[in-house]
Amino acid sequence: MATLRVSVWRGQESGRFQEFEVPRQESQSVLDVVTHIQRALDPTLAYRFSCRVGMCGSCAMTVNGRARWTCRTHVDKVAVDGRLEIAPLSNLPVVKDLVTDMTLFFDKWARARGRFRGARTRRDDFERVPPDSAARRLADAAIECIGCGVCYSACDVVAWNPDYLGPAALNRAWTLVNDARDTDNRARLAAVAGDAGCHACHTHMSCSERCPKQLSPTASIAGLKRATALAALKGEF
Amino acid sequence: MNVRTQVLLWAAQRVSAAVLAVCVLVHLVTIIYAVRNGLSAAEILGRTRGNAAWAAFYVLFVAAVAVHAPIGLRSALAESFNWRGRGLDIAVLALAVALAVLGLRAVYAVFT
Image 1 (cartoon, rainbow over the protein chains, first blue to last red):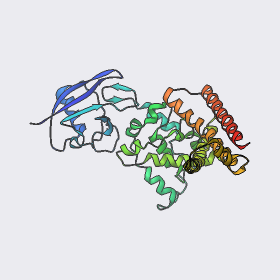
Image 2: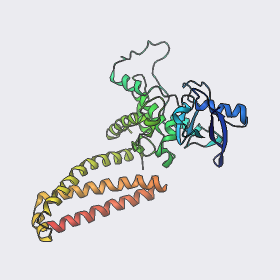
Image 3: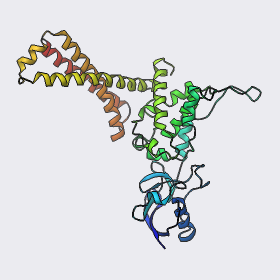
Image 4: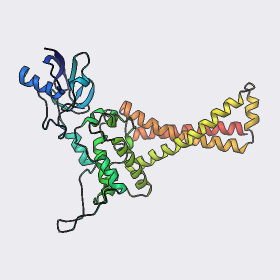
């Protein structure tokens, strides 16, 4: 039976790659490989997954140097000469082996005021949002983020500027800026502007290149740059 | 530095980049045109002395450089050397002043 030679990161920030041989199977995903290692070869391997079908965003890892969701990444597409190198996501602290601490990643969503805040109560009627309105289309284009952290891991600016909010948090803020029901935009635009916000983005587009949902956080960030510049010129913050 | 100032600096760098795109093009075309028969100080001064249009063009060029370069350098220094805060802001402001003074001095020198 054909085998894969797999190097897997073991340890925390300091550690080493450990070699495993994993039986090659048809339609095998990278998550299948990691699962095989833990269940058949070394039960002490730590990794994180949940849905296995590309919905939950918890299984992202660095595969052969690139951040990817492992459940929907076929070994066929990424193995080079029958080899895989699997490491934790970059730009996040490593808890153990392939598990990163996502606390800072999600704290930045909160700092970007990524929480919806409306004015209506359950006693009010629904807000009518025309599906083909310009704002709704912009929100639609960015709304499917599953919070996997691939864009954050791929972003050079996050590596250079640890305070930078990052593509996912800014993308989330952009969906709310375009939400006709939200009432927090003035504070949100102030929160996502400046050196730690959207204006730090260099438009390298690694986030858009790597996003497994084919979203374009770069486009969302460009929208935020325009909106925040306009608000700053008007003296709104 | 407050967030509003950071955003205005970003806007200033974008606007100055647009100005520089035109100025650099005009400058390069002028260089190519000017050296077609060889290059001499007399020829340059003959074109610029007393010419208010060229003086105004290069004042604009110098102003755009003095705005654009320090803002870009501020980001580059912060990201490459983790230098942030008031010290960095003062340093790049000093660079802006130096670029403006040296550039305007040169413009004045070839105008008079």
